Amino acid sequence: MKKDTIAAIATPLGAGGIGIVRVSGPDAATVLSCLFQPAGGRQIDQMEDRRLYLGEVRDAQGVLLDRALAVLMYAPHSYTGEDVAELQLHGGPTLLRSVLAAALTVGARLAEPGEFTLRAFLNGKIALSQAEAVADLISARTGRASRQAAQQLAGKLAQRIAAIEEQLTGVLAQITVGVDFPDDVDAPQNSELLQQIQEVSAQIDQLLATAGQGRIVRDGVRVTIAGAVNVGKSSLLNRLLDAERAIVTELPGTTRDLIEEAVDIEGVPLLLTDTAGFRDVRTVDKVERLGMDLSRRAMEQAGVSILVLDGTLGVVDAESRLLLRETQDKPRLLVINKLDAASPQDIAHIRSALLELDADLRIVEVSARSGQGLPQLRQAILELAGAVPEGASTALVSNLRHIQALQEAQQALLSAQSALDMEIPTDLVSIDVENALTALGEISGRSVSEEVLNNIFSRFCLGK
Ligand SMILES: Nc1nc2c(ncn2[C@@H]2O[C@H](COP(=O)(O)OP(=O)(O)O)[C@@H](O)[C@H]2O)c(=O)[nH]1
Ligand SMILES: [Mg+2]
Image 1: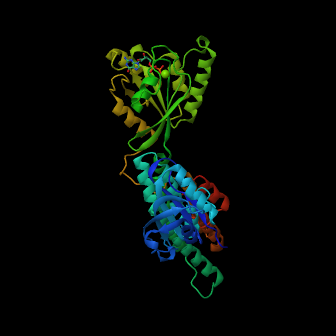
Image 2: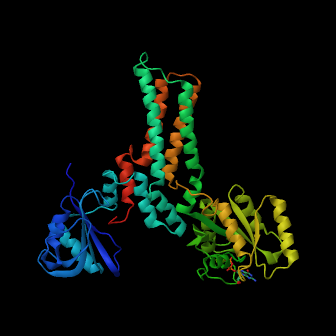
Image 3: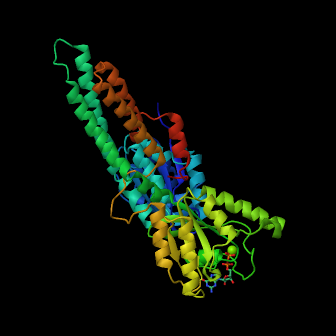
């Protein structure tokens, strides 16, 4: 099938130093020749591969649009593996749109989101996991998430998966030979096959061991701040954000809507949600009651709940007791706030009352007003979210799709192992091994459905 030639603006559409229009496909050089005249009267076909040239950009009517740099990258030495032309123009949205429109009038078609990277994958330039890493790198919200995606883009995961696939293909070959030529070849011993499969299984375990970590860094964690009215939830949100985001007053029931804000704590992207405080529903109006419903829902969806108490009260109030019961089975953290105003006796009372309710409770004492205890609070949130410090372990797997594929492969290999244990004929074992390979193919891209591909690439931005 002959591919068409696609074009898109590859840089964000805002005023900037430069903006890039990218063209990929068999007619890339032709499209460039219609738009670009290199300085010094040079022809497009005299342009050296992968070298920048200064020149003039004109539309199809010959109207001058810009002075720009152009580069031609001939297949297969380009991002997509096809002929690619790129124009580095001045970064004005109107200019970039005009140049793109000109490219579309001379034979290119507008690229779909992610189509350049899809082509790179289809042309074998990168494995599927690397293509996904491109999207992760672009959407990374913290430096740590970005570094993690860079590792994946460098092919660290792709190499591991390829090695595992090779080993399993080897196992499969041994089984097939034994089945097809039972007399000519020594049939592989079950124990030999078992050992090889166990080895692969251990490698998958290794990859999965840090996957939870990888996912936290890639996708972040939802953290809700809940509690009774006026305990300082909004003050705490503002402190954690280091910004006056939520309204703080001495009036109970100030916060009624959910207030969501992203924050980076040691490279882990957290989505903090400040909620309406709880109090006796009989005393509140309709708006506040709806706010309390939202608070409950937010707590259900959160990865971590922070329950805030007012240290100056010296007791655990009824609302807080109810919240403690409701969050029993979830990762949660108790925060005693207003340390600056509370007496040591008050704090001690609350502490012992809390521990009486649940001896394993994690309790942190803070003052949202002075900032005291905030470093401890940040650490406790990270620990509860399951994050370990960067450098302690590099997660190669971070994507839920990959985690599920690895788990499926592991399941199939376990089934192969028990079949071998029970001396079930090896041709049946081969089905399990094939299933494991199919699951791994979802990561490498060797056996991925068109539907999954569409799903992955449609989430890319335009021009990537
Ligand atoms: N002394 C003291 N007062 C605080 C502290 N945090 C919040 N407050 C006060 O408590 C009241 C309620 O705070 P707010 O953040 O609106 O509580 P929310 O209803 O739980 O969101 C306000 O008057 C705050 O100034 C703190 O750490 N120390
Ligand atoms: Mg509030």
